[in-house]
Image: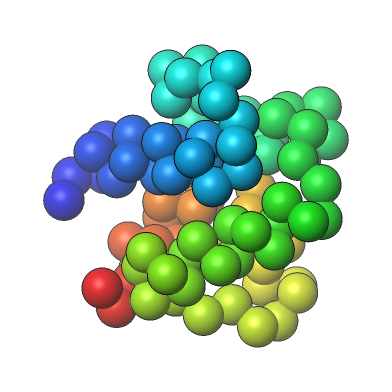
Length: 87
């Protein structure tokens, strides 16, 4: 799968997983922060994203410090998925 396809797929999964239905994948910028002033996600959302990575890509993040490095923006998540996916 191409990186652009993976980004689009991940954006759709984030919207579905976190019930961000007013948003479309096109409205989420690749480099937009997922937390704080970006999408405004919180710690519960980060747990949901970790579950999403496990379920969809076979990626198991157990260290919170690693999670903070991965769950920055779509670009960072896609890069991590491309390097670590098992599915």
